[in-house]
Length: 155
Ligand code: 4NP
Image (cartoon, rainbow, N blue to C red; front, top):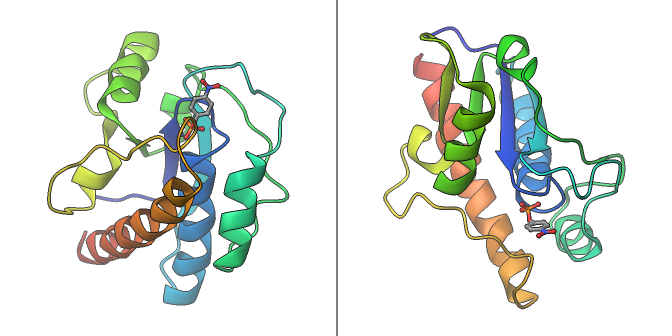
């Protein structure tokens, strides 16, 4: 499978997918695997906004800079633009498929499943939870990105 661009997709594009994008960009650059990454949300409520301040703070503490991120909503053109669209949870995967009705050959999958982590494959949404959830998101994003790079290397 030839993957040269990946779009990470969550609900608001202010917590999980911007984090995964930042972790992936940093680790891909270090690993020398040349894949372009971006993120968006199935919902548009936060379009144009920066990442959630709690996510920005937790990410900065772990060495990931989210300051340049601005949220945007998934659009049909994204299915042409990106080789692979990886959803953070199955609600968003379903919504992605509903919005764009991907043609055969267009790839949309669950992020934590595609990277071959053990189940559960749902990436928990930290938005309505405690601050610890944001730190846990970083651990999960790092595990997922390790799996992502391994899979990209063998593909
Ligand atoms: P995200 O988190 O999908 O990881 O960006 C959320 C952000 C905002 C909302 C829900 C989840 N919201 O309902 O506004």
